[in-house]
Image (cartoon, rainbow, N blue to C red):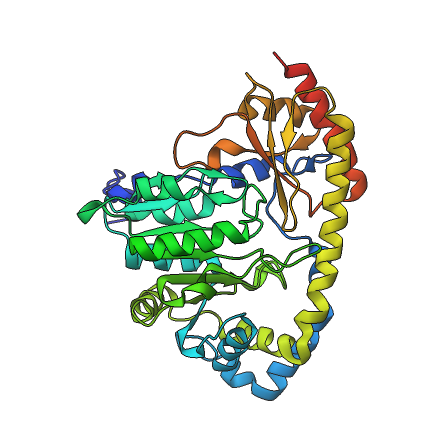
Length: 401
């Protein structure tokens, strides 16, 4: 029998969880921004100007020269021991390196947490709005995701208590980004952090704290992490994507001993281990307090570009009824359009004027606000930001009811 003689009908049956998986809205929007001349205020990518290429070249050469065979061999699933120790030493509370699990980006950490903690119909609590990538990571496990009302200081404690559930319907955890949140750019206040940790402990509700942007503060560092206040009640996630480079795909989890072994087993099943060469290169780069010298240069660049975007918004949006926040760090700010407008409907009109953004609806687990949108200020120049915000204002002006 020849290949062409075989039946051409498909016999593949997709799992139910696969039917609930959808392409990333942001990735689809980024395809639009590849058109020549488009100023993209949509992406969540760090600025390539911040990538320490020469430091990586030197570190890569050193790793290959000093430990090449081991760097290219299979390795422990937990991660490279010196890197785990460096992370434990870097974090602002007492962390045992045995609690640190190296992951292939913090996105994998979300996937591992979902596999270990979520059953079908498990209640999972998130902020309003929340990180789209977390919703995508949780969805295949078929949870019941519930949004907790939030304001400029973070989740509202009374609403958290109302939505935590009881018995078999009790939430497995609350997922939260306290620092320069994606998508809003907001930072949880000290008072709200203290209240949240206290309430979570009283409710016996685990917290999953995601902190990829915490080192990107402009003038003052954010308050202490939630996990520092109750290490046994939290899982902490971090990443090297924003302070070194995302192409490394290098993140980490700090987990209580009660959860760590299962996360490790899920990691082993997923990909055996994060590339050992990448881990050793990062450990080499971190020597000599490199991050203490490098990260301030990222902060200075992002602060300059954020200030340029805020100045452009102040200038161009006068009289349009548009609202926006003023982040203290990170990569994003959050905009709310006038009554009656939809960010989804505005997007193609903006693209016609060669500027792109991300409609905010994608970041809501439920009851999305159609008037919201996310702007990123880190990959465009000051001049591009000014031009892009002026074009966005023109699109809003034309579309105002």
